[in-house]
Image (cartoon, rainbow, N blue to C red; front, side):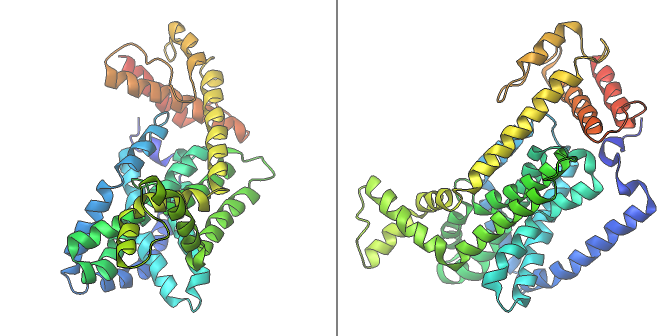
Length: 384
């Protein structure tokens, strides 16, 4: 069986024209990103500051990474695809967005629309070149969040390099800028990118819906407009409101003034910014929750329905009863066998269910589908 099949099924990369298209797109985005990187790495010692700040921001985003891994448990994305998406999000999206921001004469009005596009650029590349791995709203949210994570990490490192490091030094400057991560990495950049990604995932999951073109545009506009409002003063207003709520909880006077008050505000910046993020996303977070609930129902229905008629060597009779136990937060019991192999076997069974549902939603036949054959062979191999 072709080992590239799970990655390239239905992909334009199976054809020469598709590979040329990918090369052209990468060259185009590199033309935007490279000048920015040259500016960041001049002088070369700046690279050490960027690397240190990036690593600290990565450690500060551990919770986000764990949450994303948990959400991706039913049909886990292969590591090589995760790394490719993260590389685009980290190396291309922030630099390309920064280049276009510099070229804009009204950047405070365009930065939100510009950056929210580049954060979902890795997702759009996956939809085009790796369609098997973007089937649901959840996939759109996760790929979008990965784009927002890479963007957040690099932007934090650049702010350390350009703003905090010259004034405060490396350690104190990095510590100050880590507040940009939000709550352990779950910051505005990730929320907005996940929101835009949810709309793209909806278009993929519901190909026959009359809303498939409207929903992606609406979620993108919600993210971009919220971002623009933040950059034009709303964030400051909400942080002041948050300070009135947060500081009294820690025995601090929110009405104090002077240098000591500024130091107190700086010390409590992380919880204040976390509260600000909840307030500024008061309409965005319910949309994200709705997307996760709708996607989760699609996944559970697909598992229960599409695996119920599989051959006995794919789903043992004793396993069929467990299909009904697939829950919102809890997966069905793993098949018998070593823990790692059993987890992979369950994921391969889920992949069969999702591929069948994906084909049926598009009115395509199940017979002769190479990806179904691949995952069925994978189940048999793991059984052995």
